[in-house]
Image (cartoon, rainbow over all chains, first blue to last red; front, side):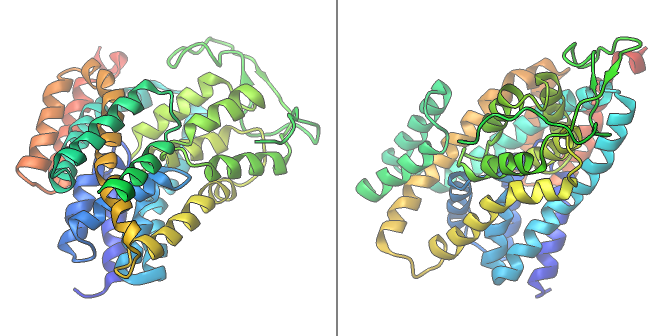
Length: 172
Length: 218
């Protein structure tokens, strides 16, 4: 099938509906599908993910970059609308129901239930991305340094990737 | 965030998001006969401006760190309990957590603004910025220094993922068979390279059954 806009709509619509635990939890699947479709190399996908963390706003806007690489501006628009559309519709309907019922038992139960799956998927994403981009001591040092800085919580989150980019320009 | 603090001003009570006296009492607690008090609408321009700023400032993909001080502590449009509920709501639904969270928050905000307008204003700065980045950084004819920058960004992205995982790990352990479920999800996707839905659907059903609310359990 060589209709990138349709492919983008189907891929991101599906990821939106099965992506419990947020954007990062489906990162490994998004990377696999994106590379298989020939829109990006694995390394380029990882770069796009890192750039999406530098940009303002929520992290769930990564499909814009994938869509742009696949089919230009139209691809970016189709990808993000396909990704956010089902979530917005579902969340709007559920928010209305919850506001009326005030029943918080099931949202709490679902959160507890899906978190272990999210963690498993996050570790999968770490495994996949790490094997792609950490190939030498310098890369490992940047990754470990990022973890340590993030866990202290004393540095603005957006400053971390910017600092890593500066290290890359100067030393890599 | 230089705008002066504005208390919600007149213009009539909002139909959406009445404050209940039970708010702040815990997720599952809801006192019988909780009384609702009406609150006036927040000015539309203040709501939109706040959402725009929260979407404009880079936060590493986590604008919640701006939304809580601005909406809960400074402007008092929401209680911290309502914000916690919104985040739990975001995690309970498929798709980007923050989008679901903002949809829920928009339904609680003391304003009559349409949810889609709130969401658009919130997302627009990041979307435009990412589009520019995609055109500049990902094209093959990029300048030399961009290659160095993205070589540094790749490992940093891995580090940020590790940090995100670390923060939710305790919650995963609190679920029944949480560690085993996480290990199965990891193995299915990373080692056996199964399609995500083949991993997710059976594990989600199993985990939901194991962690269903106590009332259903009884």
